Amino acid sequence: MPHPEFLRGLLDEYEAALAEERRTAASGRSTRAQDLAYTLCVSTGTRSVGPALEAARRMLAAAAAPRTEKTPRTPRTSRTRTSHTRTVRPPVNRGAEAAGDAPVAPRASLPGRVPAAAPAGAVVPAAGTEPQPA
Image (cartoon, rainbow, N blue to C red; front, side, top):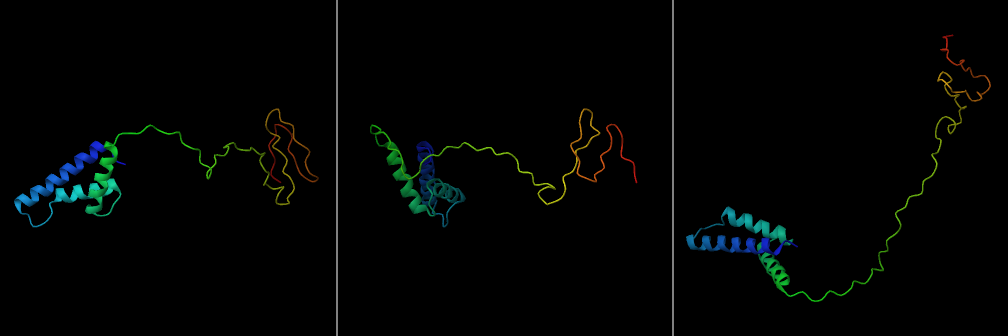
């Protein structure tokens, strides 16, 4: 719902633009009146000027009505708030082992790293050495 002061000003400007058109006997709507009509429609959620004027007047009347004492809201039963905690699961290895290939031995050239047991037939270079081309 638009702010009542904005809506009141918009209605006043639109009525003033229409009165100006009638006074000057303009054959068509001025661009100002068209712009105000469009803004009224957007502000009230309608598609034409007539329903927009009615909706604006209803909104202004509702805003001017005295507020009654607020009653406590009853909780909604149709939509229950659920916990937004997330379960953290360990990562799944989807590498070479998942495809059925033999596991790859870790790089042994990093200082302080001991190579894991390599599969039979795998060549693991000694620590601190570079593999030699065959």
